[in-house]
Length: 335
Image 1 (cartoon, one colour):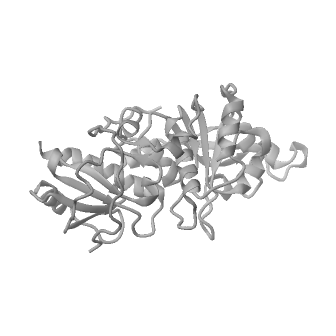
Image 2: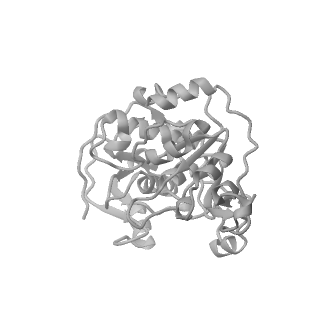
Image 3: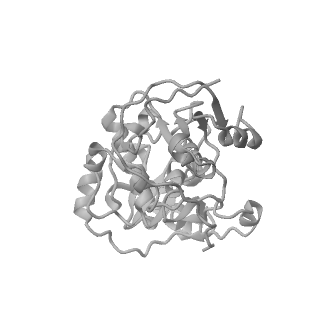
């Protein structure tokens, strides 16, 4: 069929974007491939260090056309995308990060069937995946401070109350120090982005942490493309850390320290619905007060981690297939 002899070759990283945005682009490539009867090949070294897939026919491709599907900067129009992918061109390079708000791919029946972990990544996988995972980002530095860290008081007492029973992941060791032993965590942070200074082992650890999010049943998270891209291929119930609220007057000496009566406020994911304005208007905020049981297999998860409600819209599906990944060429056309 058409899907056997025409290809989209997804290339990453591009335009200085991290894992989250690149994963959005890869997922979009699969949606487009399914729509236009093509197969996806991947040329993204930081992805290929951890994942295998059926790459039959990929190694000999030499695309002469590049397709750019972005939500910023230079991009091809929808008409151009359709024209190129409908054409008899055998292969087209694609870069991009644009994934529609209401798209959620069929998680555990899709990504982990199409892509299989390489041995180094699979060696980190636990026998039992933790059901409750939190991803906390402080921000990208400078003025980029996110979620609970925008609050003027120490957020960690409230986070400790919120996250009992969770495995917590972060790209900053400050979070692990602030939470202490009240949660399970790797203790040593690793960047959740593209970083040429990382070793292959560190890149694999990053993908392990991404997979922990994707395999969870419930996720609490700071706004981040890294965690959102994992949720987009999962069946997890997910909520964002919105802000903090303090009960009573902040300066009332009779009520005790503000940190002791402050709580994390959660909000539902707003990309689930087609009408973002409606979702924002009717956003359901609530306090995070954990009543979760302890995670099963706690000792095993601690060792492995240390080592290294609105209805959803109809979900998209893509072709499946898992085979050994062969080495690919390095540079495409970015024209």
